[in-house]
Image (cartoon, rainbow over all chains, first blue to last red):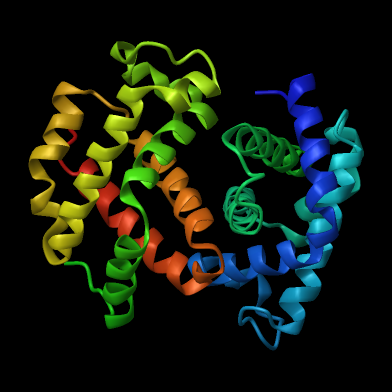
Length: 143
Length: 147
């Protein structure tokens, strides 16, 4: 399910609209993930505070969205572009790739809440494909 | 037996009283058919599903969206025994409609997103957790009679 030229245009246009809110999007998506899918908390046992909107959650949400922004810029070759991030997730963080889908879902929920009229079905399918492609690129070095 | 907290019961009832079910049902089904186009395999008799505009304006799709919401409202009224409430619906989806049950999760995700966009900031993380738990129980009940 690779990204068509039309998908990429849709993604770039939508990202240009929402990117100024990237940190807020990341913080909310991560907060939701930790509440709605409590098993994901197991990756963050080193944080003092896992509650929605806490300092470590906000900081990490910003980190994640910086990665998403990078992926948008490298949308024409995600596998090559995200190689370092893939190595990080594969060898150091060892996040089970099933969790990429969980975080992606929560990012989409936040986008629907923050941009209800812009997050049309066409934008939704393009963003869902994009986040799946990012997850695939992040999984590249796992085995 | 599913255990519901007071917060979960109240929240789920509130969600259904707040949302416009005439809008949410059709919006969720059409979003599902657009975002996960392989789900269109179950709607061969619905006519024109060629593109997003056709799907969104298709009256059969809209009518079916309302049927789905009516089904959810049945679960809402019987939260302590959704499994039995859905016995016949489960047999229907498995034996007659032959829907791959993994599709239930796809529709559930679309419902979550449509409800989120309708409720805005009121759809907090705790509200989302309660709603997704409700949908998970609904999906598990619909899967129950598949063998």
